[in-house]
Length: 117
Image 1 (tube, one colour):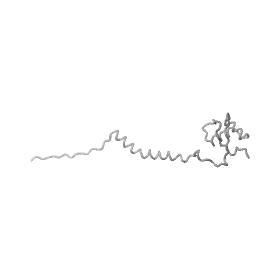
Image 2 (cartoon, one colour):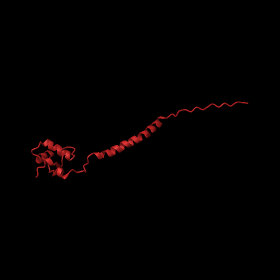
Image 3 (tube, one colour):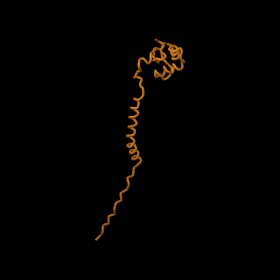
Image 4 (cartoon, one colour):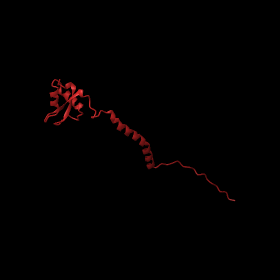
């Protein structure tokens, strides 16, 4: 009689290809990326928006005339104050990117510079 010998089959470790590692890394990073995206999108609500107007008593408005600059407006509404400070306050209150204004534009003036009774 002949004896049949069976050799045990050794299991090998799982070997991942470069593509498999990339897929696994992307799958692991997806929840983190989703959390960051949600935080970025919802984090904007903490910032002041241009839609929310301040109290009507906290500022008055002026309309820019043709050829008028922000400096001229500052000198007109607050002749006793330093025009640089007034220009800066008006630019901040109106969320202006610079100091360029155009004719017909309506600007909010801080109440402390309002000379009207």
